[in-house]
Length: 228
Image (cartoon, rainbow, N blue to C red):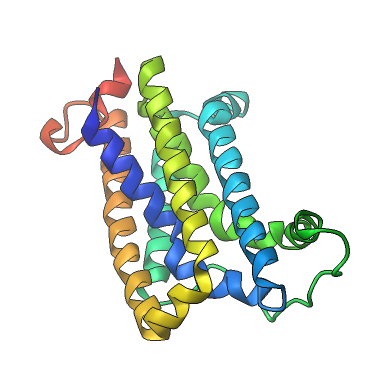
């Protein structure tokens, strides 16, 4: 079991999902809802994120094959996307800026109200705020590194854990934002941005190593396993 890959994938996915940094944006879309509805929307959002990430993890490589895209090319393109996301986070910029949304109709029980609100904010909050080019790229690239069924199950477990943490942060979003405030949020965003930039460079190194085998020092690449 490659525990290093699991830890790296968990940190990378959690960084690009950026749950703390996206708390204010989520709150902006549900601030007029009752607390029970807010919590229900947060849990549904986390489930939707997990299902979408899993779908890209399982079928992403087949989609690439369908369009004739090679893994090294996707590594390099994906690294650029993740790098852009990371640089924007280092500058303290959100991936989406909103101007507020009115409350959903308060009809039915909590589940019905939450489902109604989720249908309004699935785009743009779930996609592309959480499930954007960066997270899709990350899921596919880590799927490419997964070579056994047991490892694939562990990676899906990582996706579940990452989504669960997003859900916890969204459920407690009002508490978190009140505690850390705007300055604390910006610190978290910038730290996650630095992590993403480093991961993007690693993906770029791995892509070049696959295109030009033997040119780069294998000590600093993770591409060797993918070539076998």
